[in-house]
Length: 169
Image (cartoon, rainbow, N blue to C red; front, side):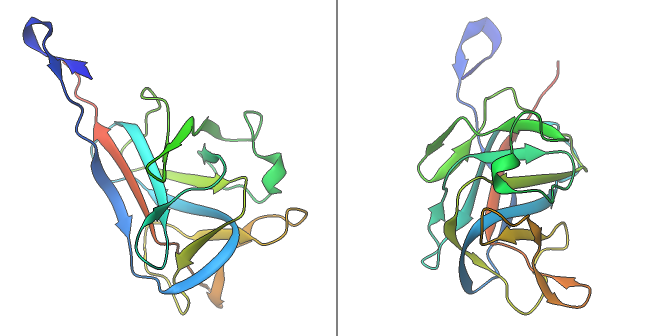
């Protein structure tokens, strides 16, 4: 909740910032996706999810939010990872939820990575989202890498990033 004039509680409206549902190929991997936040912002009250074949949201493990690409092992994700911004605090309704104060700047590139394998849907023949790329590894002892469709063409996950535009007085 936020508070308006007279200290009355005002519900926080969580809205989609980025939504990709164009892929149709399932996979079971440790997952990562880079995203470009929309102009405006900043944004907080962040939620993120992958999508399943049925189109339902899914979340597995802990999701790490970074300000730079990570090409290390899933087990290497943590507060000391270069570019670490935050990690999800919980999964509610199959969505990762970050602390309310975690903030993304508008018009900025970020990377999100899981520390656990899970099933989710991706593109297969090409890019379906111009703002970023999918990163995967199927084995915890191998590092994340961009999911390649063809030379210079990278795949994307089906995902949703939601949040609230921060209003400054």
